[in-house]
Length: 392
Image (tube, rainbow, N blue to C red; front, side, top):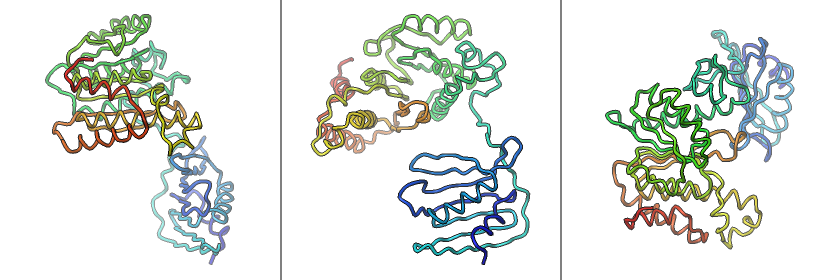
């Protein structure tokens, strides 16, 4: 039987297909590490992807560095190592007492390993290298379609948002004009992208309205829409809570509307009977000011924890309140935490069938929780006004 070092030197080479460290024997550090060969500057390296909680960390090693890393990790932290190669497969098991067993199995040589480039190109909806006029004018790409380095996160965000739009396409009618309202549109990167994708790429008959408080931003966006010939894309200066420019809407989008502005946008969407709601909340102060609970006091006494818990509770309440009004709701990750902490997107799709018991249950459970936490969110109050037949 080979010792660990001999086995690793035989297994870790250009014939390696994949390897996995698992069965952590430590309370700290990664729970699993996946290893694969990659090409980096025309050299074969080995990428280790370590899972710690919900995050994955990547690190590249040379052959010698990886062997030393694996030898240490197997000896000190992990209970199992499995590897698969063109010529050799192997398993290392470590008992609770530290006894190590190495088993190998040779097999007929398989096809050469297709080693992927270190940076595999993601297939975005808006392609890098394909010039898009509004992305040029907004400073995201140049005239040749190359993404400006400082704007790459914005490019990823735009494409991520379009993926959410792509998911809800079956909810949008093809035989009539679709009205979409974007509350708090700001510089309108995503508003322009939405129009371009739905109308230019997918061929939907859309009428998109962007609303924002900043007059100069609205003027600039209208000039750009006119420049591109986007005849059904319009921008208006106004407040979410007071907007009454339409009587019915197919989809409502609200991205980073501050604090209770999000609640007004969601309530308006329900009032109009919007089939789809996409909302990324921001600056959630209301519940943070209200929340009180004796059992949670040891946690709530810390300001930063109180702020984060309040934000999560706010979005959870919003999702459940929408569900209680006939929507199927999801909370999804918008963009990576490394780019912004405001990364949750509420996606709500109005269901065709009324699930009465489910709606009542969602409402009752949410009301009970709000009572326990002594919170009175604006969305709950606005939806009650709508149920009483009044306009907001």
